[in-house]
View 1 (cartoon, rainbow, N blue to C red):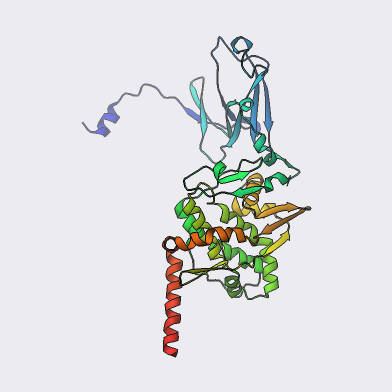
View 2: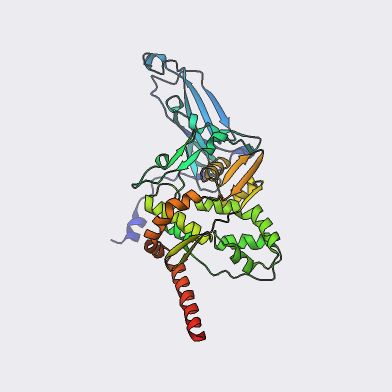
Length: 376
């Protein structure tokens, strides 16, 4: 017997209409999911619910059930438990709730949902995070104690706590996959732009879409404008972007990978030069003062102000001093003194990671050698 015949001969027992309905008067339907208790031991009353719009968090404060609480506990002074959850927007999802009303099934869309779970703040030490949570009047207040950060390279994989020796700070680990790492740092795409564009800022935007790390001479070849105008626009736009991408794979890396990555960044920026396997260092670094455009930062790197501050401060790229932001590179002679021998030792490994750029440089070197031979 075929499937069509079987379906056709099945007896229809009953039909239940499904009605797609919208809440009345433009109201929105919200769904709340939280831990329940058995009917014989309900939550102790009264219950209060608070919503924090800045943190996008819903909190339900529940009094402690004294009959089931250990009075000898170290948290014996606790008089309430907080259930918290983050609001999830469902406006772009086909998520609904099906209700039975009389003989009909009523399907209604859900705009927002909350999953509320116990928040054990009384057992967590949040003192390290307090400096990052001060965000008043859209101005992030920096703590001067966060300036004391020292990088430590170790020979085994480690957490960001072991890689960074910081005072009163718990840095968030920003790590990227190998493919993304090569995309950000190792590719050398051909830059093709129209010379008719006169807006320097627009041209710089396009440059950073193609390659997040650029040398100044590369920019000058594309943008035919006076050097002082280019530098001014770079100050306003590019330093912040580059500083963030430089840091993204800093954490959770072994000793060799971490140092090679730093070496690659310095090499791509023109601070380290390679000639026949010998490494020379250009210590002419730029240090500038200026203001940080919070909206531009968020639009560019898609991170919250708290995360941005952690990223920039911990890489020593940004310093809050005398009411001004100071960002850029310092003359880090100590870094080069510690890493020059290391970079020479691992130069072959760096060449493997920089396959495209190394091949391009070798071709240019061969081309120059051939020109010299012809001239001779």
